[in-house]
Length: 146
Image 1: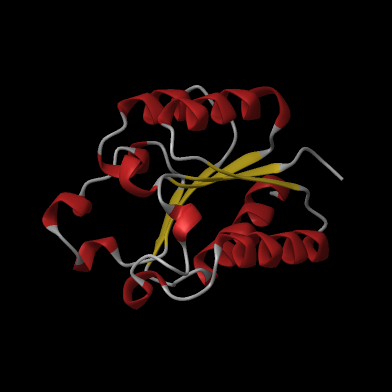
Image 2: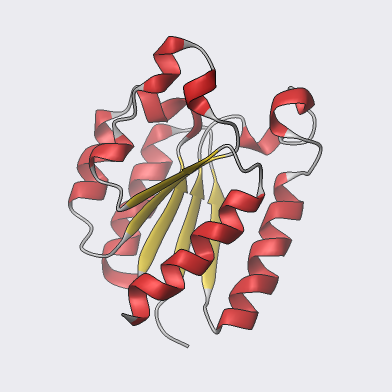
């Protein structure tokens, strides 16, 4: 197996399945992690799946990925719209970056339409529910083996 894909999740995603299920669905983050692990294994990929409510921790994982990761899949959650720090960290990462959002952020409040992370992302997946993570893993496989 090659270097792992870092799958990073921002604030409040630890409440997935409980918080606003009409928007985010009923799957938990543990369900998403298990689905990602199963697909990664089938694709011959290794993953490191993390979640934090703290911006600095997400930045630290992006820094760690610089030396250890083949790519980053990130759902920055609310930090999407506010974090220049996460953008700056991603700008220092040489591999592919894919941004994932469970909901279609473009159908929601206007402030959610802007993403700092998109300025660095090689692709954005939004509005496919938690299946977006699996789509991102499939795309990442293509990007790192191209």
